[in-house]
Amino acid sequence: MASTDEAVALDLKEKILADPDIVLEDAELMRALLQADRSSAGRNVVDLRGVLVDRLEERLDRLEGLHREVLAAAYENVAGTNQVHRACLAVLEAQDFAAFLDVMTRELTSILAVDVVRLGLEAPAAKPGAGLGPEGPMRDTVLALPDNGVETYITQGRGLGARRVTLRRLISASPDLYGEHAPHIKSEAVLKVDLGSGKRRGLLAFGAVEPDRFHSDQGTDLLTFFVGVFEQALRRWLA
Image 1 (cartoon, rainbow, N blue to C red):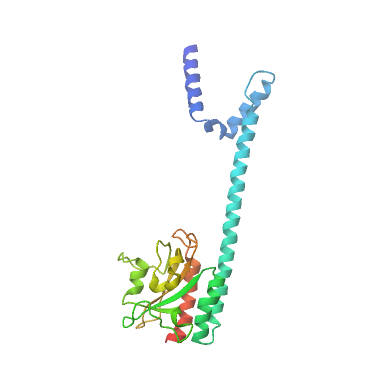
Image 2 (cartoon, rainbow, N blue to C red):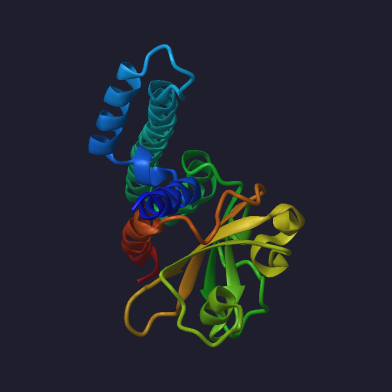
């Protein structure tokens, strides 16, 4: 009988040593062990209360870390929402096409914290990268894309359907789209622009010099909302 008890005790010991959480995660078992620890005061025994306190401190640290992450994410989301709302109001307030392009290239870069904003429109008759904007300083804010250039640029020729919003890092930016800024652009957000049935297709590109400004793990809900507002405003001038 004694040998059987010893075998059971040895087996139990091996299981606990292999996975101590079996004991430490069991509240009822820990209470019983702590009670036994108190009755054994003065002996050479392990202080289970110290072990439990250490475990609770570890849990508290994890919870505090998670709390900080949740707060940071919530703050970032609120800040991003405010940015997009400001950007929407800015494009809606433009009184003519020149003012619209000025908002697009100047105000949006500041509001959305990007470095370059470009509008690309499919224009098969024009040379890719040629300016389509009004004569003057706004000429190169609207650039020509080849036939089916929107789909090709967004999907990078992979033959997949172009998503409404594409966020990605760049090894080399397109000179046709970013011109002299291309060597410095390391990430971009590309928004597919729908100008209505029978109209040429377009895209809105936000270029950033920071590689981590845009990447595929980011959410696209706010930019999807923005491009819906942007294309409605753009249709007024390109109808």
